[in-house]
Image 1 (cartoon, helix red, strand yellow):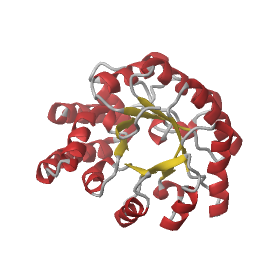
Image 2: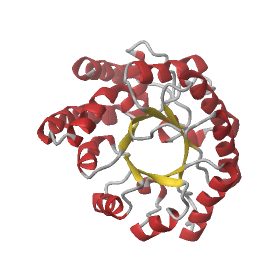
Image 3: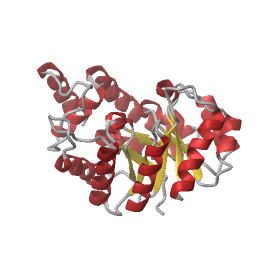
Image 4: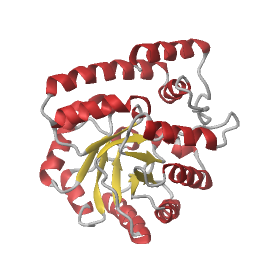
Length: 292
């Protein structure tokens, strides 16, 4: 199994105009991340991949294509979480059979699941697959908050190796790192990567790394080396870019930036807006010229 520390892109997915997966474009995005962004790995099937709008078979197709293109060049994490536990198990088995290095699963959402139900959710996937698991904690979208003691209960299952921490509660992050130093934490907010790195995270998983992966690594490595002022300057530039992307439409703008690099990043999946306006494309060109 590969080392899971470092910089992981949350993989974007290229869709055709009719909403089907654009295999050629997806392969190009994978290659761009490996060859140009020099990432340590890919987080496949997450929010950035527009996962929660896809069918089970489409999710499998994306897992298959990403693995086939990346082979064993980098580490691969498969996000298999779903409100449908049977689907999560099916996806977990499929990704494990493909050779993914680890699974991840978003905390089950929409319904107000109790913590014992959430714990059962993770343990069921692990028991069915035998693979390692990363908890995907993103409270601002799921409404699910897990405390330090509850993480301790989850970590009683030795297959749960850590958490993708997409939250702004850095007090909780610090408490988790101190309480469970042998469990990994990946920062999930690209715009707050530096303070997360200072607090000792083991890596980061980000959507903007598809185009800004080089700077992400610089921030992470400089923070680890204690070069905080240098890292802060890079974070400033990164956040200027992120501010521009967010103001113009997150996934569509990242896809447009990839297109400007010659990558067939395709459309977004409806009900998201499928493509940028001419004015938004002009903004993306300005962002590329200034920051990339």
